[in-house]
Length: 474
Image (cartoon, rainbow, N blue to C red):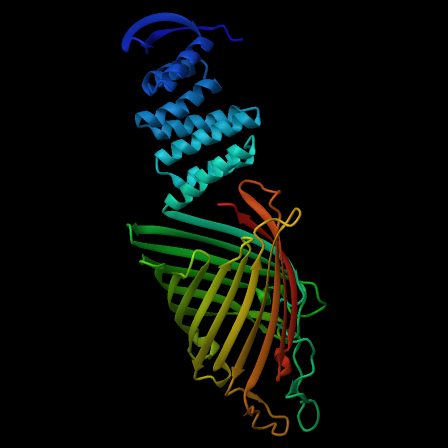
């Protein structure tokens, strides 16, 4: 026990008498801490702060005094000092319960200073060392409240996944049209090496931040910046390089939401910049190409009942390629509807419908498509895992599609009668591990499978991939 005596003026509070008196006396560190704590509990933060600071002046690494300052300083208008003291107390903590107390006090000081992102960081630390389920739920509720209050919303995720088809390549090198091979006299066509399915690993980094710059009872406006980078490692024996499948996307967006009597209305305007590679089979090098998209989208969310909701959406997008690509401008339009329903078991069913069209001066870019998908999410864990699953189908038609004419080698390309037709079936399974959590994140595994049939064999593809995910609990 530290028996060092401190001599300083103490404000002694007589709670029963309701009076205050000041005197000078010698106290042990333990006695001084106890008086400071009593003042703090009596809602007298200033004397508690003065006593704790006096202790620190002689014992700079006194964790108890730092904890008192972390609690008292924000109450007297100095949350920055409280945050510094809380961080110092964290560094001196030896047990999980000490770490938990220090993290929560530091987060509280950050909230008082309106440093909500910093508060979320310390609440994640607190979640990691919460002593029991009750305290963990309390901290989780606080973290969710901070997230709702925070005008900044940032996300960071990373995945590393094996895939049987990194590049959307064909299953076979034989080029057929309507089931008829194009190989033979007087012209022979086959699918090039870079057009075949390439297996390997895909690493994806997603980072985004959004700032809510205006909000009142009915309206909210925010601006966002997002980045996605994809890198691959091809495990096939091929001349195609990893660099050839590298992509980068940066997107700037502006969003407005308005609360209505039933549901809400949202409008999003975004500008995205895409950079990709074009593989040169002769030089085995990749040329950098890019394009940008400008998109305007509108969505309407409606509550149909206490169990059912629907979201309607419509968008118009312009795709503008770089001059070096020689690809004409593309315009896309899309409408969609998403319906959700909660069962008696609290399991959730989802149905999504989508219709789209694309117009361009390039015949092979003109497209019509329809898609439908179904999802099912189990409310309760099944054994040690949570589950959600989905299936979907998409039909695409390219009415003016041009194909190689093997009977006319000098003319090269002719329109395909009826156009190109693709039919894609997909399925996915998401597996979560609720009993495994670190820093407020839970790991998961997502498995995707997709099969596309087409009357042009270059677009007959099969893809299976599995990836690890991290999901925030707030």
